[in-house]
Length: 295
Image 1: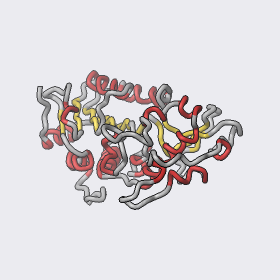
Image 2 (image 1 turned 90 degrees about the horizontal axis):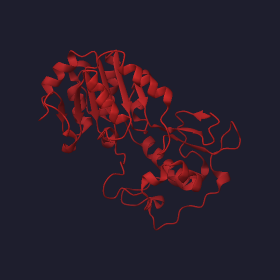
Image 3 (image 1 turned 30 degrees about the vertical axis):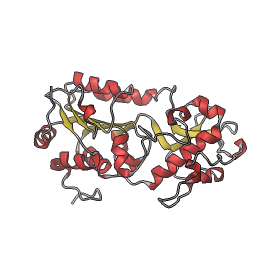
Image 4 (image 1 turned 60 degrees about the vertical axis):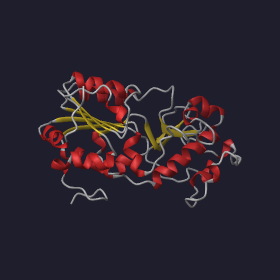
């Protein structure tokens, strides 16, 4: 079955909707220039990025893992929210019962002004720092770049025609002593680590409970799926849950394969979220200029 592609029909549905949820992935931040590590060239110093995103990797080589995340944090801080982030933030402000579930850790949605009460960071935030020993210490929205002097090689900027030495697998990794990495100021013994959810770690149960409560508070009118294949759980299960609550699913993704599983009741908009979302929400948020401002 072929899903609908009419912007006008979607606008009519959105105008009559009361409860809307959005599930967002890496594609939302693509227009901001952040790497997704997918497909060819998705390695970092010849490492699969997923191999660095585990507690075991951090225990085995905390300096290497910290360099990877310090570089990603530097890139996120340098990037700017795009029109997709701003459009979702404006929709959240206009709709009383709107919830954004983001798989992104880059912190761009909050920087676009997305109300904190209407967003849940499923996989944490790269701007947060917490104790690896789980003493409970967490430093939220830490914008220090680099996090500590030893990680300065991850925060260097080079011209576009020159590769950052840290990214060149032929250049040895800068030697970093454990004692020079950030340590927990609370327990005094543990290393600090990025505040993201690594593979093999559970998501925050309190946050998941809040999300479940939202879904069961009433019918859901629209489930937006933006820039994600929605195959990682529990994010993927939210699409099914929204359908059970009566939602029409609307997918925004440049990959035509993302339309798989949609019905003729659903919508599919192929393209960049930064271009499509402002169009879809225009009746509610108003016209948006190229910088993400409502005019």
